[in-house]
Image 1 (cartoon, helix red, strand yellow):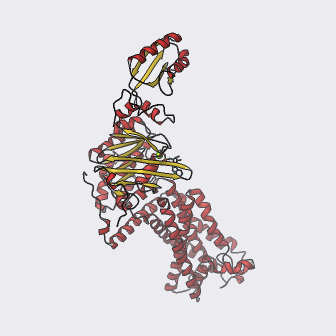
Image 2 (cartoon, chains in turn purple, green):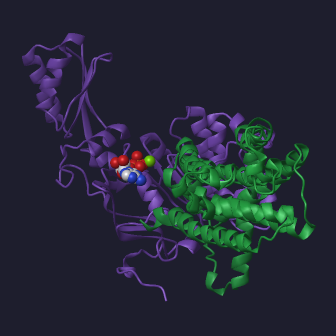
Image 3 (cartoon, protein in one colour):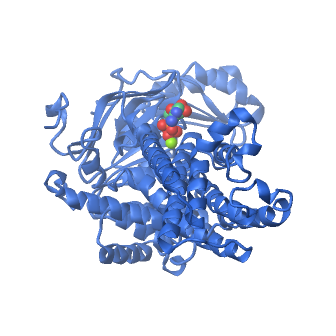
Length: 338
Length: 273
Ligand SMILES: Nc1ncnc2c1ncn2[C@@H]1O[C@H](COP(=O)(O)OP(=O)(O)O)[C@@H](O)[C@H]1O
Ligand SMILES: [Mg+2]
């Protein structure tokens, strides 16, 4: 019978997608290095990471397109290597490059995918029609996809992954390169599937997208999971606070930046246009006072100085920068987040 | 959707599996045919052999002494070979189509679907078979128009046509494998041109083999294209053909089986990595 993978008891009861210690190398490149995470039933997890982080490789392993070198992945308890065929019957995939056929019409594309999900003809025709309605592509249904705009293609591609009402969806950078309006439309489509009970793993390079759609964010870089949690938890983990100063004279920016480096952790970021310098730092009034004193001694006039919560983008930058400026484990003023 | 229904594939009867695999392949073939009729460039490949027919019949045909030609009529000698080469040239679209699919993200999606893994490959060859039946029909009509005549009974003619289609079909498998190996549509064209044209010119298809260099003659006489050309010439002219018919069948079957296995393993290779 089925070869049992070790650590069976390790899967949480409710885990719909499980990756356990997944390694994958391409020659010398180590694309995934011991990646583990879980996606609970009915939730959305955002796999967040820069280009080359290993997101697509992970999605390809989860959808049985690639075999892991070691470790295992499961979807709904089905092992991707030993139970690939059953696994494929319950998933939908929208890969990174749009997988719709340019020379076919939107309807033909959807109907064929329905056929390949082994639906009877009547059913795939009905579902194709329903999906086109949902995608607002009814008017374009019988035109070749090559006449579609980029956004329409992406919608169709996404719709194709939904057509079988698959309970588990994998979406690889579904909105990369799209304008904000189209992105919002796609978000809505994903939200509809989630409302219908689907479990979704999506990858993205955009913090905003992960924050908007995902219940949990897994940050991955250079093939490793760096941190995971809700967006609030991630913000807290980056050090909790950002010290930000706005100087009066733009000419003072570089000096201000040097000065700030001694006050916070990691690299200060400066924005010449806004005359702003910011750096992750600890919280507390003393820091603010100390900063004020140091600026005064250096003779840099300030328009404003303060401590604020980091944006998720800042958290992301800190988390994925190769340097390890933040001692996340250090019991500072932030409560344990997990 | 709260509870995931996982199909019990073990409970499926084998003939249902086979039915689904064929249905998947038919879907792939339908898609490929739709793509073919919507790609004018690919249709060019079907018209090219008609040009060849005209060139060989009226331009080169004059230069070749009919006395050198077995049977004595260059039209009846060359036209069946052109039927054959048109099949082989048409089979090059297999390489292009396969490479196009691999280059786009489409194969990734297909591999993520519960469809039979063999469907992409068998569907591709089904497409090619349908395309070659149509192509051959056009070629026969064109051949008759330039003066080619059958001189045998219907049974032999049909057997000859089947041999032509079978060889073309076996070449589809070679080209599908080439397309998968190179993964790029334009390299696929050049890579598949090689074997096809080599076989075409080092054969008895266009000129009788006794006009070729001595060392090449035994190879040229026994390679798949030549034996099939000899077989169909004999079949169409009502001459004894048994020896060549069997050789041709052996070649087509051998090539098909070998290159189906190569194609199938290339197709699933990435998954096995
Ligand atoms: N088929 C492949 N062959 C060789 N290297 C690959 C292959 N696929 C991905 N890689 C490499 O693995 C790393 C991770 O790639 P990928 O998973 O595509 O990242 P992401 O999707 O996060 O941008 C990259 O360095 C990439 O170049
Ligand atoms: Mg990617």
